[in-house]
Amino acid sequence: MTAADLEGNTVFDCLSREGVPLRASAAFGDGIAAALWERDERAFTSYRAPNHNTLSLYVEGGNGIRRLNGRRVLRSNGSGSVCLMPDTLTTDWDVSGPVSMFHLYFPRSALDRVIAEVLEADPAAVALRDETYFQDPYLEGVIRAAVIPLHWDEPGDRLAVSQAAQMMLTYLATRFAERPARARIARGGLAPAVRRRVEEFVEAHLDRPLAIRDLASIAGLSPYHFARMFKQSTGESPHHYVLRRRVERAKTLIATGGLSLSEIALCCGFSSQSHFTARFRQIAGVTPRQFARATDSGLAA
Image (cartoon, rainbow, N blue to C red):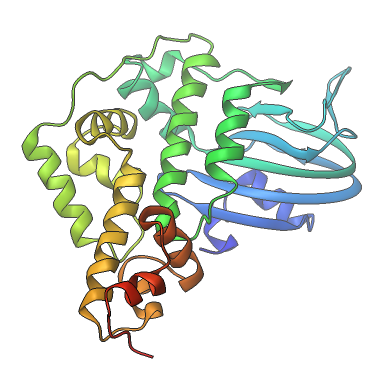
């Protein structure tokens, strides 16, 4: 995944043109994308009628940034400050000093699906509020714990990040809409036939990235409802289930012998051996090489 995958997002393109250093970026399908920026300068930035909504969190710093809103000047609270910028709304920013900021970009179409499927409301009657510099422990917690620490380009982590993005969209639609509606809670688990289709799809695609929307489409559900119903059925999140299945396949390939660890990593959807080792240890409690020695496997050099 490269920065080119995010080209066309108004805010992303604006910061790229200004030469703001980009630490990480990824697109997750349906127009949803994320970026992590670092800047330390004095500058004026204007996001002109963006073609997407933007959720922003100041991960570190940001005390010297102000939003110029007509005659009002809104001052940042620094690290932990959250902003929600609806699409088409032009916003002006006076930047001073260092800041590390996370952005989640999502188009109106992605938000409309959440509103229709989860809130069972008319998307035309719901609009996100313009909110600047507020504190939100839930959003900050999800971003810091379930998004930033992960490797966005790693197939093993992309499912978790895309699931976190869907959770945040549902939360935003519920808490920050002009006409908020109460989220409908999915009850019960997946039907046996549906669960079997999802599991078969996962087994057939363990060597490639999987997003929550891919699995939800197999089940004919919204990502939000699918994640809840899948956990109800299996006792684990879709991300953890897929990760566990990747590791189980890796165990089989190690025990069979004939492949190197780097080859096994690729066969199981891990783009690097280091990431494979970390996730294998997370699930199995030992490294792949330790597992190979314990099973007397013949790994290729």
